[in-house]
Length: 421
Image (cartoon, rainbow, N blue to C red; front, side):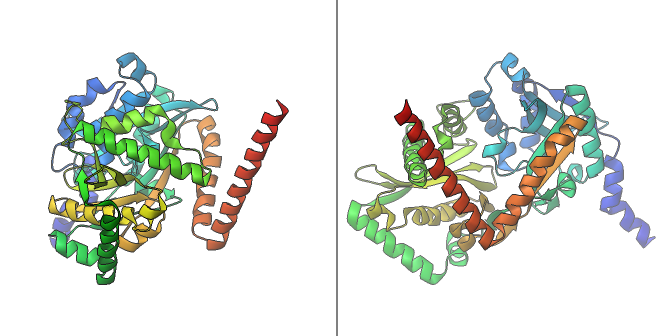
């Protein structure tokens, strides 16, 4: 009898209840699904990352795809799975585009989102079998003309619950890094930063104050502050990318509109509090000069870093303004009651220094047609190669050298072409 009781309350029994009882709907515009989406998102039982918030997705769609239903109809496919009682259990917002003649479905805003996990109405909903979810997506794909799903950055686990899509995932090229915030700012700061690191931080901040006057950590609370801090971010990033001879992704005006819109309330663009993206800055009190910026996707319980920048002035750089800002940011997020903090996908020194959690990520490929399968093969191979390079110091150095040589060759070719003309 004890064994029977265990079976009835275990994950296997939950999967049996979920299996075969989910019915799909596909929406082609945000307005049609907004009320349903928000109702799932606002439920404390929901399992989702900040990038599955309606306001985050809608900001991206409005900036990149357009606001009207006809514009969205061309590429939006928002999958909703309901149970037998009609309750929404899973939401997967997709953007479909033709790439080299193949219809490819990816999560909305995938290049700017650290995590592409579906939104699950509860942990029970997330306990569905991976095979069942994949079969439903294939059926939807056949009906919607999708050749392949490329669903990258799938967390293996989220808030302690397994992500069913990750069970079919190949390891991603990079993982993400985060930390659990403590009960109060002082305790968290002492755990994250060593005594020596905190002492150095205070010394650097003192030198910055000596050079520029009083300095303050600020979270944008008005549209004017959002505009000011983002203007500094875009300028600092442009300078940084130019120095590195790398194309600047933030030069795209649509991406700028997306970030600005995400940092304001969807229902009231003049209001910042409660927005999907939060913008912080380290600012000189007297001049308003922005030394460093940080922006992240937020929910009630989590801050997920999306982007950061710092002033390229060597005098400013000696004080490590980005590190100072990060120190204040972690304290502030703890004080405001958020439980988790992450610095997103990719390896970096500052992430390794403060993060105590590795968020393992996977790449999910679901081919619907033969054409989609053939399209996915080089994408899978590229991910494997990137992962191998990132985990080998020798290969990473070689890859950087090759990239540098290619950029130099491209510049020389462009210069020769200009002279010839």
